[in-house]
Image (tube, rainbow, N blue to C red):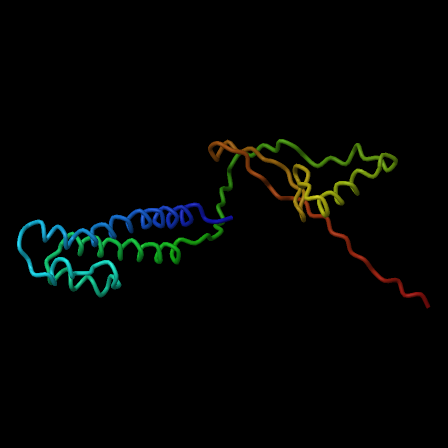
Length: 180
């Protein structure tokens, strides 16, 4: 499971970067025409000026030298957004954290109870469940995973929700009998 904050953070930044690229492109495309619309200017500063094709790090000094602040601003903003994406993917990663509260009031909503077990009531249903899980993409029954059986626990300490307490692990060991 991905970390919600980290995943959302760089997803949002990536979407912002996608939209920002359009703003950047149009600003770089229109800057020479804007300068031309203000009056006479040399061709190398208007019609022959290409902010779109070269890389941003090459265009930034040219835009600053030509005092095209709109172009310089969108380039700096674009570089900051891209840097933020790289940093967010490296800094915001999932880490499990143990949270302990010793006096929380917990209420088990179900329990393990073997008192009603009868060997005569064993049928093929457990086998069919295992077969369905292994071969038919069936989900595990409620209260089980591939390794554990667990109880559901409600807590009045933790607001809103049902929390799971893992507390049962069945293990099978096989031994070879050496007959002599």
